[in-house]
Image (cartoon, rainbow, N blue to C red; front, side, top):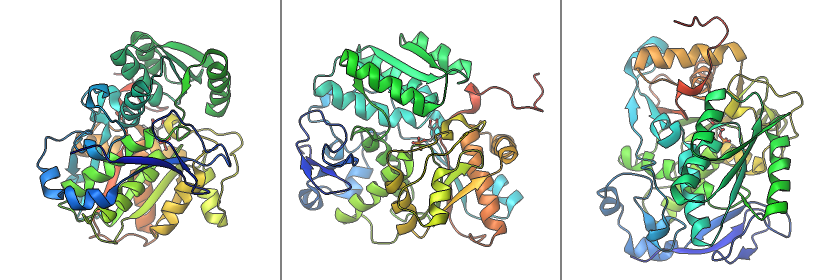
Length: 393
Ligand SMILES: Cc1ncc(COP(=O)(O)O)c(C=O)c1O
């Protein structure tokens, strides 16, 4: 069946743009552009069980991905990650139906592989010759790997205190690594300047429409893995927010396709107390999030003081009946260790933050013991340094 990509649409003003030329943010109001598909046709021609029977992986439903010609797909085997029952952890914490989606098994060790596989594939199809990105670590690793795979040069800008293994990995893939004195927002400004100067394409979170399309596949996978019955609660660590907004988009698409009904999981956005702009905006009832001053947390992937898609994250969390929470710094590493030792999943600190949030929400009576809860371990713990108090062996 043909690819169903129809056009791009601004998530603020609704203006429509051509999907077959390179686009970034809405030129009218700076809104994030979403890829839209001919879902009417999809409803007639795409059967959910036929699709679910295809080989697993992120490109399982190419009709609903933003690449016209499959020859342009740049893949390293991303997606199709396991959704694992967590019975020992569940028993310890009093949950009967706890699941962990282990995104650490993606190429380069995080869910960022999905977004960058999609973005690099589409950009290559549209003629891009060089990439740049600001990163907290994992997105840069993923872009460096997919850039290498596509034979397209990559310049990465990241905070100088990003764990050294990420830096080493990116250099090994052949990327030019620029260490920045500051946080990811400063890295973003430098990547922007580099793009303006050299013509490299800037694949910053949500500033181009296609990383989100890779992330949405997590939503499609969850639905197929759970036999089209979405969980009651999804807990996700939020920096730029593509995980939550990508899945939220997937659920809307699947409903339009007639694959699921109107019921949605309650989406929980997790940040660290040292950097919680979305949590603060949620509590204030605001539509946008003010930048967080003095951001700090060991979970470097969620050390993001401001997000271009803040309004999309907040919208998804609110529409779902979910909540945005912040967890204390010392709970992050502690709960990553629990996931690791109880379930054999070497969790990234961001994954640990989701468990810390679950414990907090349970104590507050927000989530019931028998609800089906999915935690996202968004990355492998292997690349992070030891935490204070952890003994080198
Ligand atoms: C392991 C990990 N989890 C979560 C996030 C946050 O993802 P997002 O920026 O899409 O919200 C990141 C981002 O770098 C990450 O590396």
